[in-house]
Each structure stands twice: as C-alpha cells, then as structure tokens.
Amino acid sequence: MKTIYSKLMLLCILIFAIGCQNDDDTMSHTNVSAVEQLYAPSDNTFYNLSANSSALFEWQAAHAEDNGVVLYEVAFDKEGGDFSNPIKVVSADGNGYETTLNITFTELNKIAELAGIQPEESGKLIWTVYSSKGLNVQKSNVVRTIEVQRPGGFATPDELYITGTASEGGADLSSAVPFKKISASVYEIYTQLKAGEYQFATRKTGTPELYYLDGEKLKADGSTTYSGNDKVVRIRVDFSNGTYTMTEISKIELWFAPNAKFLFEYTYAGKGTWNALNQYIEFKQESWGRDERYKFKFTTVDQEGKTSEEWWGSSNADNSRPDNNTAASFWYMVTVDSDQWNNCFKFKAEDDMAHVNGIIDFSATATAYTHSFTVL
Image (cartoon, rainbow, N blue to C red; front, side, top):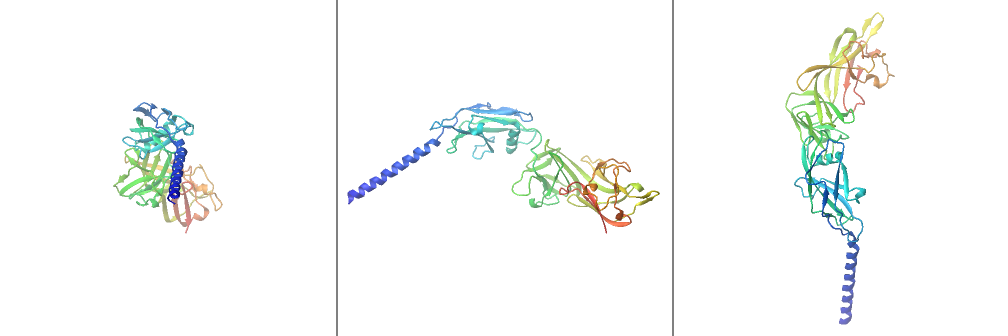
C-alpha cells in the first residue's frame, strides 16, 4: 500500500514539474531585453517648439528571447521624475515596431504643457524607451533630457466656461457660464464680475483644464483675482497665441435715428443679456410716413481706463419694416459705424405707440448676437 501511495505522489510531482516547465516555455516568448543605448537626440538637446518642425528619437534595438519582433514606446516625464507615472507614452514609428520616433513639435508642445511648462517659457523633459512583446515591459536604464521652449498659446479646447467666486455661476463648476466660440481659436463672453477669483475651464464636469489671466497673457493652472466693483465685461481669449482682451460694457443705449437721440438705456440681466422693460415707443411722423429706424450704442472702457463707443446695428445698410414672417436673422446685431441712418433696424408696425420689453442677447446659447421687442 505504501508503495502504491509513494508512486502516486511521485507521479503528481512529475506532472506538476512538467506543467511548470510548460508554463515557463509558454511565457518565454514574451521575454525581451531592455534598450541599452539611446542614440538621439543627444542629452540636453534644445528645441524651440514655435517652428513648424519635428524631432527624431532613436535607440538601439532590444533582443527578444524567441528572436521575434519587439515593440517600443517612448516615455516622457517631468524633470526629476522616475517614470513611475510618466506624463506621456508614445508608440514608436511603424505602429511601435521601429527603433525611431518622429514626433512633431505640436505634439511635443502638448507634452510640455502636461509637464507644467508655461507658454513662452522653457523647461526640461526626460525620456526613455520601453521594450516589450506586449507583456513583460522592460524600461531602459538610460534616461536623457531635452529642453524645450514653448510657443505662445495653447491647443484650442472644444468648450470653455468661466467659473469661480467672482463669476456669475459661482465656484460650483457645474454652474459655470459658457463662452461663445467666435473663430477657430477665439472664445468670447459677455458676463459680470464681482470681487473674488475666477478662471476658465474646458468643461463643467470631471477634472477640466484650467486657465487664468496673468498680465497680458493667458496661462494654465491658476486663477485670477478681481477686487473691484461689480462690472459687466467682454472677455475675448485667443488660444492660438495665449492673449486676451477685457473690455467693460458700462452702458447700452437705444439710438432712435429720426429724432437723433437716445430713447432709453438697457440694464444688465445676467449671463450676457440686457433688458429695457416697459419702454414706450413712438415713431416719428414724416411727410412720407412714419419713421421707425434705430440701432444701439455701447459705451466701453478698455483695460487702460479709456472710454470709447461701439455701435451695433444691422448687417444691411437699409431695411424694410419687419413683420411676424421676417426671419430671425433680421434682428442679428453686428458692429457698425456711427452714421445716423446707415445700418439701422426698423421696429414692427405694432411697436408704434406701445409699451415694450426690449432684450439684447449676447449669451453663448444665442445662435448669434441678437435682440427683440415684445409689446406689453
């Protein structure tokens, strides 16, 4: 009986040993060596990323235990990092099979931004190479440094919001107020600021990228403090060069061309809208009929405190009187000159000798900057 038991135990041990050997043989094809030499760029190479160019990274091939192909990735980290959590890992050329990586300055600029290097500033990145066959990743023991000079500007986000205690939405990110995208790289918002801090977020949920105003530049990862009186402003941000303008909108008036005078002022109502409530409208009687032409004057104050005028009117030099079938685009507002008559809108017939509520809508949700009147 003991003999049978001993034989069974020996058989189990033999099967286990063969199984382990097979496992080792099965996994051995995933073993690769670490990259031993980095060829290019040489240590501390400097790149000015404002050029329309690219950088070539090159290294010695690693060896696979089964003599098969090896996959490569280039890992980037902040200066002083250890690659335990690299800021970016990029597959080598040829879907990872080549021992080179051609990377555009645009992509390097994004990596530099992830490293916290500000636009128009220089900083250092470290890089190394990972080799693998999809498993058993080996990190090279060789690490090199590159220095980069970032151009002005940032990648343009898909959305932009203002948030913070100084903003209309407050510090709750979910209540952030949106900007309107007015060109490929430019966002604009009409909003009110109060004492506190504000910043710009690329989305209303999760962990957005954040930007703030510093001097004459847009910068990343911070906030701007505002300590003045409440004021309505237009903020225009250009991500292509990292610049901005801020203009106070101190007054909006309706210009009635037939009488060459302003009929009333608008009051800011929040989130890029103004209203003029319960205002009386009366056209001017002329020999040929009743005249109803109007446009708007915005009084503005720039960042240096200089007061100016902006006139807003119709894209058409002249217009016919609108009715209920007129397209919404009739009321779209564009900047025009101060001529008494040109580019004026016209009131509807029912607005004559009536009280109206007027609204100006420069919010991000409006299809275009526009206005309306509703008879009371």
